[in-house]
Image 1 (cartoon, rainbow, N blue to C red):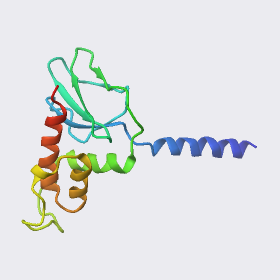
Image 2 (cartoon, rainbow, N blue to C red):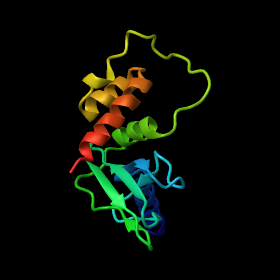
Image 3 (cartoon, helix red, strand yellow):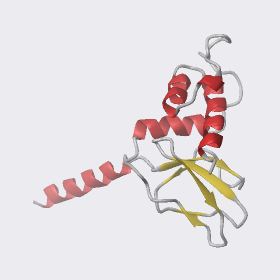
Length: 148
């Protein structure tokens, strides 16, 4: 009986560890907060007064946080996060690697970033090898979503 309970507790703990974060940090005016940082709903973020940070959920919704003396709390999540989509989004917003990239597409094959207007299109282009175009399109998408 003891082994069964221990096995159940261990399995529950591992399942919880595989859960995706609710948000990915896409932009921040605070240099200590790097793009690609994963955050859970309700998590406290050390964002000082006068600083801003933009979070994106797996659905593509963008939330802007405005810093305060004691930091700020990530908003409540609207829907359950998709681990694969959050991983792709994190890879897209994290700083680009420096140096040679193998397997990148040649110019002329990747779409114009201006034609990528949805998060699904942006992530699809990224997974197809056009990371630079996807990053440009994501910047435009975030700017558009952040408008009041």
